[in-house]
Amino acid sequence: MVGWGVKKVKATEAQQKKLIGTVLSAAVQFYLRSQAERVESLKIHIGGNNRSLLSGRIPDVSVSARGVIYRGLHLSQIALNASRIRINLGQVLQGKPLQLLEPIPVECDLQLYAGDLDASARSPLLADALTQLLRSHFLLPAGNLENLQLTLGANRLKLTADLTGVPLTLTTQLQLASPTQLRLAEPRLQMPHLVPETHRSDMTLDLGSDVDIQDLGVSAEQLTLRGIIWVKP
Image (cartoon, rainbow, N blue to C red; front, side, top):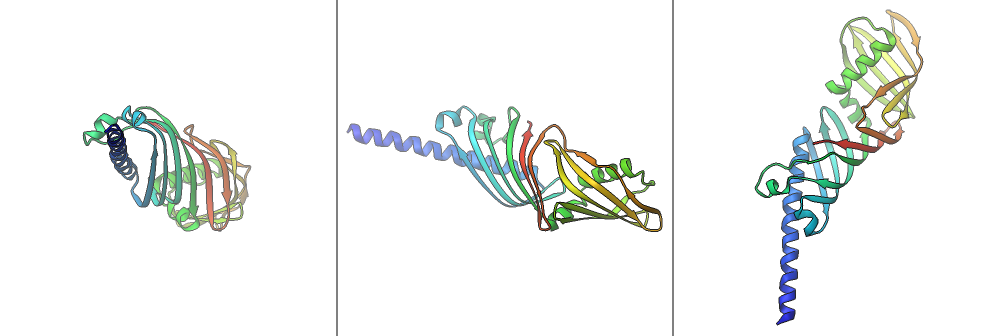
């Protein structure tokens, strides 16, 4: 009789963990999809035991996704790992949206294929940053950059656009200046019939204090970033 009782308790605990894991997985999926404009595929693994999960603490979560569009940025593939996450589990179990209760560092492995990077150039987030960067370093005349296109090469980046109907081409090396900054090394600007070819000193693009990039890879096929992003409630 005792043996049967133990088996029953163990089965109940396993069922509880499965239920909690299922609810959390669904809540995390909904949360992540709500943050993005599009997600083609999404896989989630949630680690932890009943005690930690029931307290609203998730020891570790791993996420892999493809075909993500976030704030206009096209992300071909992305892998995320986070640990020591605190959430509003009580509310989640009542059917309410998942919320983070404190900031968490998320390890990221991000890949942007050349086509997706080019599509990202039309996002307001990246287009505005590139426009401000060019104006501050090359003193471009007033006007909006249109028809932005980005092309990758071996450690290089090429930007083409139109400024008030005049073609513009910027070629530069793309490097990691610091964990929070990208460097455009040896930039060269060409605007035929308007200004002569212009060379400038290196430029930096600040990504913000919530980013900690550890590795950057650039080839003709894709751009790869590895590092940590702080996600705040």
